[in-house]
Picture 1: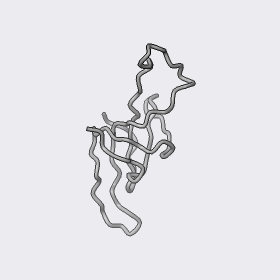
Picture 2 (picture 1 turned 135 degrees about the horizontal axis):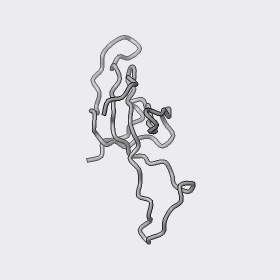
Picture 3 (picture 1 turned 120 degrees about the horizontal axis):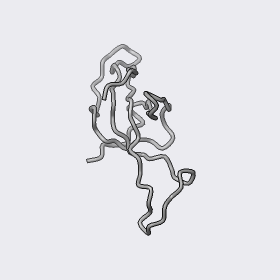
Picture 4 (picture 1 turned 135 degrees about the vertical axis):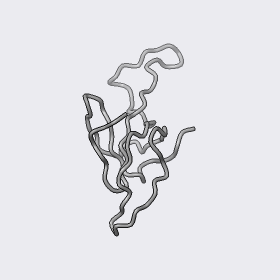
Length: 96
């Protein structure tokens, strides 16, 4: 997926992976009661430079599904779809 936003530094552009809308008991959960999903797919990586100008390799790669911090990041809309720009440090792990 090509995006028109290039994250800078140690930031990562992700798109949240939507959670299931039906609970295990068959109850449909309304949008207002759902929590934001913590799983997201990596769409783009930043430039990798830190404050000192050193280039640091990312621990994640494009198309990885990752677990992100619940309240971290900045919401952005790209082509009408919700995305999130997070610092790599807000990524808690890679889902395999």
